[in-house]
Length: 83
Image (cartoon, rainbow, N blue to C red):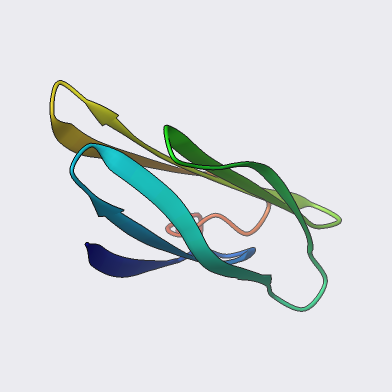
């Protein structure tokens, strides 16, 4: 099993994965955000962080034998929004 941590604006998610399975190994919301775990494995991990004007979503699952991770950031604090 491999462990990896993903940092987002709303918080962080740590997963363990291998052999076609993925598990939530830890997660935490940053200040001003709430966290909701939608699924903690073994088929998929989904975690959402919500703040007053921002939402971070994390999902991980195996597709065709490969781990597929998606991170979505929506709201006023998106990276790269300052011009």
